[in-house]
Length: 500
Image (cartoon, rainbow, N blue to C red; front, side, top):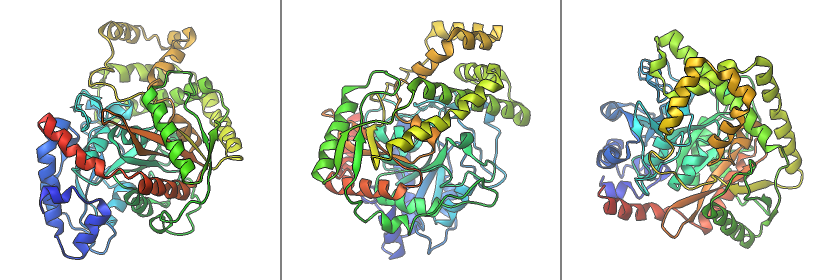
């Protein structure tokens, strides 16, 4: 199978070609490896290739994606016998003893695993640059980040290495790379996809696993494949009335959509991101939907604090696990990670509990909003992609950070109010995604808009808990009237211009 032919198909189409015998699974796998060999030296998306193993991997021939190549994210999606580093030197020796539920279902779906994709340390940033793996780059412009934390997956799918790649989202990590790489990315509802068996609720229920794809139908089929509880899961949410594969093809009916473009944290929003929402609103109105300015009413600063409490606590716990199980030392972790862990260690337990309890306030506010609207529409991100290295901590702040660590000044930072400032600085570029994580509601980024310079700009839709069907239906409707798949063909011209 020629590389140029391979790039023309999504996962669904490749699976159909294989089933009909027009091409063999091995030929498809070889085309994917050839593609990776051509572009990944520049993109740095794949951190752990498994090319030889993939060519020999057995798969169920009747499975929905039989023989289709895929990449896993190097965070939580454990594969027996392979490392899962979470982008950290502190977990470089973390080799999984069994498949996660996600990986088990991927294999049951017939997908062939080519390897793992890079993530920032612990998945903590909206960029994919780690001391362990280096910087992953955006295929649309390799001077820019592909986002994070599923940035390696986003770059690999956009560049055509694979049609689908694993991702997870604890604060926007599916939707942000989708927006920056011109992909479709759906974060499912809390409980829709099992985090087992190692975890009950990932990030206390804020994080969900799924995938990044170039087409809506691929995400729908993957949601069918991955959905449902596993034994021991904390709860089981109601399944859809049928298969997402079928249901997403139906029209969603007339929807009432509340639109907003201002940041919930009162931070700046780039004009390109505002323009993307406004142009999408016009498309929606032409489709017969009702769109008006409206937003959920909640305390944005309280949401930022609540999210940061989760963030710091999870980092502290994961660092402790790395020390206990793998003998990691402080030197094995990046400075920013150690500072975040210090804040987690020094946060009073009662403060953490109160912040966790506030999640209910945001869920109730969103529930009240959905009393009048079917969905909300807003930017996926507040800014366009940062340049590679742009988000590095300045040298003077690194010196200050080291001093804070030496003095164990976490409590002082909490008392001084510097933690609130940290929350704003860390979330300013991506202020729109955390609401769906803390409320456990589904949200998606759709690549409807492109700048005059040819960069993708994602728009975000959010819906009630459990309402992935209508999100997928609306996405499919937008995909039909404003198709984006041809943009990936244009990406070849971008590659040629960059010498890839």
